Image (cartoon, helix red, strand yellow):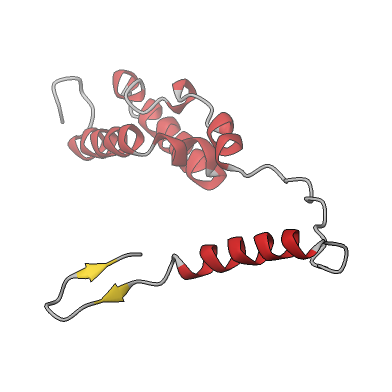
Amino acid sequence: MTASGCPHETWTAACHLKYWITVFPAEFNLDLGLIRLTEEFRDVAAQLGCEEHNKLIDISTIPSYDWMRKLTQRKKQAKKGKASLLFDHLEPMELAEHLTFLEYKSIRRISVSVPGGKRHLP
């Protein structure tokens, strides 16, 4: 028995439960089974006369984590417009400019190694 008249096992369990509530509050907010078990433990502790320890494991004060879940969910993006990959409508100079740009974009990603172990990027 502790000084408050509560069994030592109940006091120890309440302290451990308080630790887990402090470290993982979202779990105690979102998991219905865990909420039910915590409430059952509080009821048993209350029957044993451990009212002050019940305050330790009160999960009703845990903030709602619904806003966090909504924050991490991705919004659906609208489909982008289709781009034409046909070049038959371009003038020869425009076609040359487009192809030069595309070649530049693809070639610039190739890394080149030279003897001596140094790596050079174009």
